[in-house]
Amino acid sequence: MERKSTREALKDALPELAGLDEGVVVIDADVASSTYTKTFAEEFPDRYYNVGIAEQNMVEVASGMALAGMKPYAVAFSSFLAGRAYDQIRCCVAMPDLNVKLIATHAGITVGEDGGTHQMLEDLALMRALPNMTVMVPADYWSARDLIVSSFKYDKPLYIRLGRMDVPLFYSPKEEFKPGGGKIVREGRDVTVIACGIMLFEALKAAEILARQGIEAEVIDCYSVKPLPEDLIQSSVRRTGCCVVAEEHNQVGGLYGAVAESLGINYPVPLRFVAIRDRFGESGAPAELQEYYSLTHREIVGAVAQVWATRRR
Amino acid sequence: MEREQELKLRRIALDIRKDVLRMISMADSGHLGSAFSCVDILVYLYFYLMNINPDEPGWRERDRFVLSKGHACPSLYAVLARRGYFERQELWNYRRLGSLLQGHPAYMTALGIDAPSGSLGMGIGISCGMALALRKTSPQSRIYCLVGDGELQEGSCWEALMTASHWNLDNLYVIVDRNGLQMEGRTEEIKALEPLIEKFQAFGFFSSETCGHDYPSIDRAFAEASDSRGMPKAIIARTKWGRGVTLAERGDIPVKASLTRNDVTLLLDELNKELVSLDGEERS
Image (cartoon, rainbow over all chains, first blue to last red):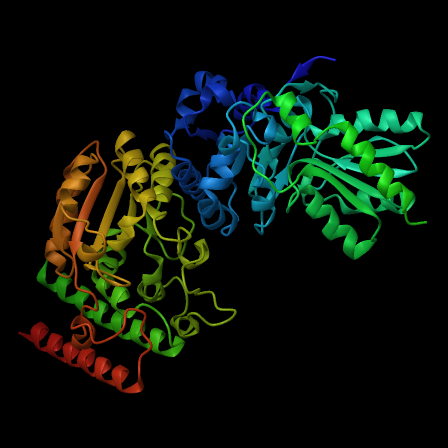
């Protein structure tokens, strides 16, 4: 299968957006080459702004532009967008409920060699905790592209998390994605595996292995972390009676947190996570780190075995 | 500025101060001194300079005002009510549960509030975004951003100043309410801001100083600034914390005021006396 990173979707999605809506402008914080906003900058120089190495200012400027009627897309590395500019996102975007799209690249441990400061593992928790905020984690290039392109119809704050590592082109270009959506990418009756981002592929690998052992896993691509596709999750879990959540994020407050909150109220079942175990990252090759931090299909298989044994009947 | 115009603005400012005093005493919280120090600047902007239309608060070609020092919002609210954006009656709900008038301004075009504010140091950056956008869509619009002096200790202000001068945002006016005080004391003792005008100049701003309570001087500063082309403008308005009421000017009222009934009476008396003496000036 051909591979591409989700961040590469920006290369094609942003110029497409510009054609769809005249109000679309792109702001970034001096990361055009690594976030692929460069293509947009070259095609639409008068609608592109590099505010320099100043993420806080970038979010303020985006807020001001939205207040003046434009549709800004602010692009930066997830560590410095969700982390450094958090108060600006909170007060200048989420609280006034403005039409500002925040696109965070280089998320997660698979950033690799740059190490802990650059491996954002807490952004989903930060963004999810903000009222009015919508949080998306596409798994592949096509879902990322569709989410970015279709986002111009959606006039609320939106955070889209993208990765640096190449991943399979999984979906077809025609597939549609929307806030609050999720997709059952493999049907099964024995266990529900909910994943987002790179962990979707690990979940699918795990499902193959489990199938050989007679456990049919239902795999859900939960690209909409907030709002969560609660009905989809619940109806699956009501059939399977147990659940595993896999994400490239700290165990605190991300997709696992969202699923646990939802199921805890609506339909408690044995539940486990495959996520970063409350640690910071460190330097290494992406694949190496994925192993070292236990974010592989093997951990998913293990977690499934545990919840399945105690599943709700 | 005509003498008659000046007297008119001074009268409005006195009424605004009375409203602000009442708001803060009814809410039993709020920043009186910091609200009073910028009343004259707000009155000048909203009753003289700015191109706005309260009947159409969302009018695209209007000038914008960003109150970066959000805690001074009682003055902004009183000015907006008097300008006709909403009923004056609403002022007495300031800081109450369910009120439109939050403790720090919530963005609401309908009320004439152009930008959210509350967390310090973000107003100049928001204004830069507005200036960049409006330069394309409404070239005649100007953006006026009022910042506190203590607030300039936030690093994000200086990021924003660089943005403003890099893009030559000459539709942007940053006005510093230089009252010299912040929560724990004097700005110059806590973290010195001076030489402030030179800092703005070094950051590429057309910069000037004025007395922030004298309308003809304020007017001259804005006229001079507007003549400068191709660069953002900074006006450092020397102001007095609690301006208009001696008790506050002397520093006998805490920064975040809880006023006694006696304080309120004293302060109101002083403002009323000032109104009477203004009557005298008008007749002469």
